[in-house]
Length: 164
Image (cartoon, rainbow, N blue to C red; front, side, top):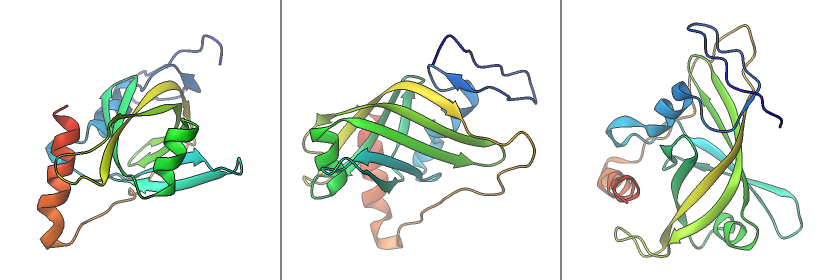
């Protein structure tokens, strides 16, 4: 990746690669008020060496170099985290965030209090790539809204991740 640094000069956010989340991306991924959106797409490496993607609304930026999310231990993504650890996270958010984050994942909590089938995974950020076009805007974000009867469950899981 070299020694490239983020150039955030007010309105212009033209940079290529960084070693950590730029401040404006970090703020979006901190997701205030226990928000689920934007949903991030997480890619792991399957047993056959091919990429496997899954959406995560629980993904949170803890620091510019650390992400955290809840994962169901019954899913392929969990097995991939445990077996290989390589991960890439894609984030799209209005008006101008389109980034890919590469890193290493590890399970840091084997059983969440809110649900014993959920684990907490941390991703150590290795590098961030800006995928945003220089012209144009992102008009929306990939969002998720749980049914009313499950909102307490989702908010509880997110609270547990944030309060670690």
